[in-house]
Length: 256
Image (tube, rainbow, N blue to C red; front, side, top):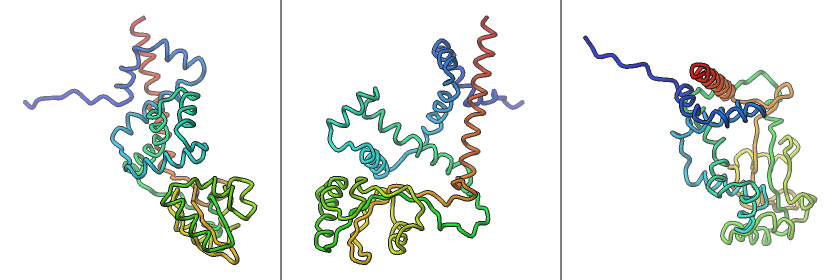
């Protein structure tokens, strides 16, 4: 007679077994309505263990975070980490976590995106970008070299050299519908890679240096089109969190 093996326990049951040693902490989270959120994040951590990001992507995410939070030197980074009770490694982990979760979803769920019929599709994609514009081609090329070869700070160069109204907002445009932009700029943005600088290009009397900050699919019926399967993944996490809660409750009843 063939050898039989015990059924493999679900991830939720395994985590419940680990977490039951910290019931006082879990009770405190439950009291403040944070238990479900905590369990979802723990589940994400477990699933993300098999997902890795390239060094290039890690660096791009970290660089984008520092730009958005105006962290341009080690002292500011140290101050940010201290004020949030984080080490720099913990901060990097948080920055990368959601991206890993989305990659996990793409690996294990199909990538079908809900697409309803809409004549305005693509016209109202939501975009955000940094813009530096000058009237002289030579200056534009010089500033681009400073940014790419000397690691100059884009925000600082915008504040010093940009000749348009974007200077008042540190060069940040949007988030706004892409259709509001010049057709040449729209073409550049659609082919751009998030976080990477575009080489100087001319629109009318201006030379532009642009960096794409974010790009979201077109709203349909007032909502941003989302990856439907990512929603299924998130709902699955909530179900597993509920399973952990039930297991913890049963363990507590058995021990009382």
